[in-house]
Length: 138
Image (cartoon, rainbow, N blue to C red; front, side, top):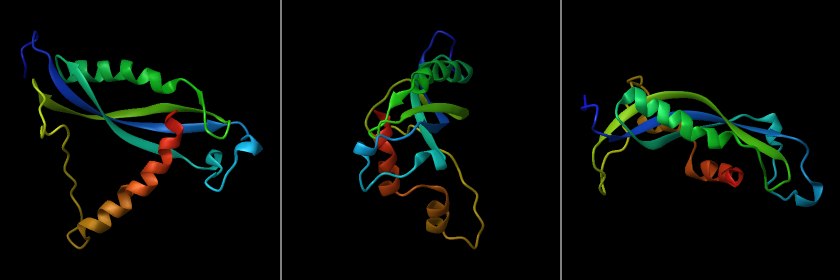
């Protein structure tokens, strides 16, 4: 537990959901277009915040995430916005940051008969799929 006057770095793990609404502009549709109104995209992220405690870190992260909820226009002319679903974890990183500092850690208990790669493939989007969603970040 850090002293109340000491600020430190925390990683707050959140989930946010992409909401897309409206019709796309037909002139903007290309070979990569998919009807995003028929899918749900959930993004897991870790925000780096400076705070005095775990509780304070959650409050700081909550304020920071308000910017995600502002609607914007997608590359296909639709309206989109992110909605914060939940803050699920907080990691005390420490007082100073330097290259190689562990910024987040969690444990996963998996069945002894399941391979690590199988678990990762099942629950985590491969990099190529994750990059596709980046077009909505404005």
